[in-house]
Structures are given as structure tokens and as C-alpha cells.
Length: 69
Length: 247
Image (cartoon, rainbow over all chains, first blue to last red; front, top):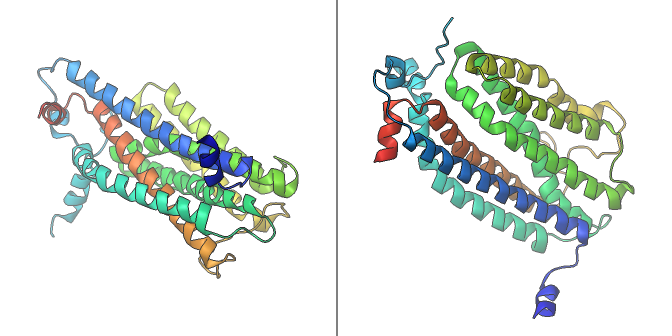
């Protein structure tokens, strides 16, 4: 079974396959990290109590940063 | 169309971008999977082997897209930094922040795959060649940018300082690109140029273009995803976030 599968993989050498596998691994790692970060952030935001007396800036969600001078 | 400046500013709000990026996730994922699978199939099974380099030339299908994206992403970070410094557009800072880790990863990938390609072609993994060295410096610039962002807790200082750092670091991007023309290097010149005919056969070129497209779509997909997370963190006190997450 393993021998049959191995014959399907072209013999391009170790370096070629290492490059392609590293690339795919990097893609998977980035997607996994992004997914976990998003999930954790949603959980954190949901757990936080809703604050009363928000500023108008928070309610409006402005496009530009308004730093205090 | 009287209110077009207001409209543009409205598009730049985190709330609008959060919704817009959310809608893009599914089509971008589909496009990424499609272009990656067709590009990989073309690069690994359809493209013929090179008459000089043999099968090792197939590394081009990950090396060139990674190197291209490493420069492109830094250029995007540069433009976002300029926009943030001039107009204080929060979204520009968010996109720059979300892009940095991806840019660093692609730079590392370009160096790693380049080293593995260099061994069979040049007989060595590494030479202190102008192209390789300037690309390595780009990786350090990415690390510096990310480190700077992580080290400054104050949002105002973090935004301004990292934007300035990114603008100064931009000087390395043209050096990486033109290094093969300015200095005698071991690294070859551009394979694909806008002004000249590509120095590569069509059956080898098509998978390469598809792989570049796949890498770019992956970048857009990850920026949309990571920016949404960053927006949630920055805007968690806003009412619309609470509404969005409860519905």
C-alpha cells in the first residue's frame, strides 16, 4: 500500500518537497493562528460586562484615531 | 455624489470594514483554494523540467511568489503608515499591523526556499550576495517593526512610532528589487518583468502566475481575518460590537 502510494509521488528530490511542504505548513499555521485568535477574542469580548456611560466616540465608531492631546 | 469625501471616510470606519471583510472571507477562501490547487498541479505535474536545473527549478513556484509578496506587503505597510500619519485613519494602522506577521513569514519563506534552491544550483545554501543580504535585512526590518509594536503599550505612541519605523524601513525595498542590477550578484535577474517578455516558457509561466495569485489571495484573506480580530479588540466597548456578537 505504502509502496503504491510512493510510486505516485514524483522523485523531485528532498529539497523541492521540503519547500512545498514548508509553504503549505506556513499557510496552515497562519490560518490556525488567525482562527484561534478570533475565537479567543470573541469569547473575551462576550465575557466583558457592558459598560454604561459610553463616550460618543465609542458609540459612533469613528474612522480616525482621536488621541488626547 | 456631493458627499463623497464623507462616504470614503465612512468606508474607512472599523464597523464598515468589519462587515465588508466578513463578506469577503468565503469568496476569498474559495478563490485561494482554487488558485492554489491548480497552481500546485501545474507546477508539480504539468510544467516540464528545466533543461539546466532539472526538477530543482520547481522551487520557483514557491520561492518567487514568497519573495514577491515579501516586497509587496512591506510596500502596503508603508502606504498604510503614510495614510495613518497624515489622516489618522485607524483602519490603515490595523491593516499595517495585520500585514506584518504575514510579510515576515513570506520573507522567511523566500530566504528558506532560496537557500534550498541555492544548494543544488550554486553549491551552497548561503552567500553574502546583494540580493540575499538585502532580503535578510528586510526580514530583520519586519522583526523590528513587530517588536516595536509589541513593546509600546500606548496606542498613540505605538501607531506613530511604528509608522515612522515602517517609512524609514521602506528604503530597503528598492534595494532588494534593484540589487541584481546595481551589483554583480550570483542571484539571477527578474524572470517576469512588466516591460520585457518573460524569460520563461509559457507552460512554466502559467503555474507561476497562478501561484503568485494564490499567495496574494491568501494574504488578503488573512488580512481580512486578522483585521476583524484587531477591530474587535480595539472597539470592544462600542455598541455595534456587542450587537454584532449577540445577534
